[in-house]
Image 1: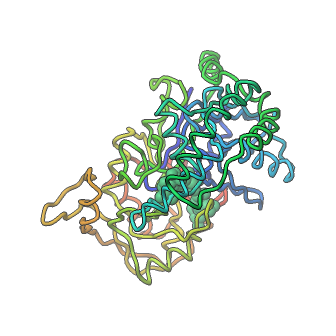
Image 2: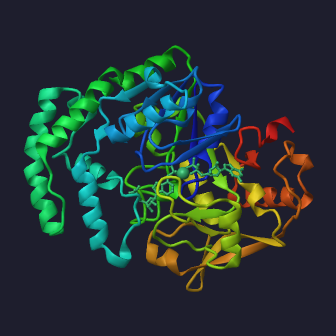
Image 3: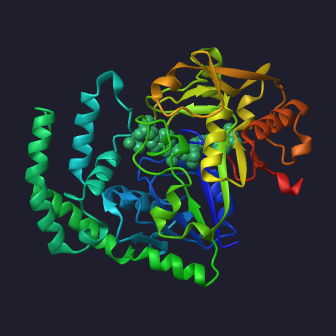
Length: 429
Ligand code: GDP
Ligand code: IMO
Ligand code: MG
């Protein structure tokens, strides 16, 4: 099994971190290939909780090499801050981390520009994580004013680029917002060069490293960030992130050919959440939504914002599963639904009288979608200690089977609590 990938099938926070951590045991290399420190992945084991943003979730297991691929946008300060906090917690990981020379670098102007742009969007704000993700990707695609890790670790080239870019960005920032911060090229060069000294030993051609590893028969695990519905090309544009966060991003973000991925696992919550703006057909802006938010502790890992909560949307999840060709799905946070009398699953949208079972391209249409709901009886029991599917309450089993049927992919894992041990492996039942 050379390469496995784990991707989110909703709008992020599906518990990818937990599933990646679970699978890491059987892999030697874990790879992040898109996004940046907008991600927030939580991993729990042995009574400890770890929150990872930019580093692959597998990094916590000492036998693993971690790779940040060419498709990731890297904030050097965030990278080092995360490594330092792991070191402080007894996990020294920097010797097991490689960062692609091709990855782009998030600079202070990206954050300032994003703040001004989000402000200018008013009520149409995307509700981004304000980490400079979209503005860094824009400069990359625009092919000017972009800095890559290879430039960052080359002291002279980095300083020259910063001196060239800063005056241009200052003009732009001043035009966008009279209260924009003043950028200092000297200060940026000084701070980033200090970070570069620490990053230099990790910077390399990760593409060759991964391709060689495949040739040597090593097992690779690809860790998706965000969720497929936030994919720049296939998601709910413009309320998306700026990378290919579905399975479509693995090849271009890592340099590893698609045919090497032999196992694609899609992770979905047993309900739906979304952080930030954008349409959300099954949203529960009521007592049930609030109950799910509290039971599931649905507050953003990165920004602390309350997550919007709603019923499971099998149309959107099924669409995500299809575009990435998932082999199986992991249903997470099933325990959060315990105690509800009746559960609803969206199996179609009614868009101004038209019934559809796929995701419309226009956000305006999705905003008008009224969910067509299937009702499934709930269960009252606490399921957080159950490790076999057959021991789940009958109604919980029926719920999982209904999701499986409507989404159209076999369920491989059911997660009933945040800890590594709180997982039902369907193949072991
Ligand atoms: P990711 O971004 O997809 O890795 O997901 P996050 O870590 O942002 O959000 C998932 C949250 O749910 C984290 O706080 C996890 O610790 C927690 N979690 C994961 N699986 C379960 C589960 O089965 N039940 C419960 N109650 N919490 C879970
Ligand atoms: P993980 O990996 C949930 C959302 C933001 C915003 C939109 C664009 O933990 O699942 P960005 O800062 O990326 O330009 O914001 O995408 N978003 C996420 N929502 N989980 C995430 O990551 C997210 N990363 C970005 O809230 O709506
Ligand atoms: Mg998250």
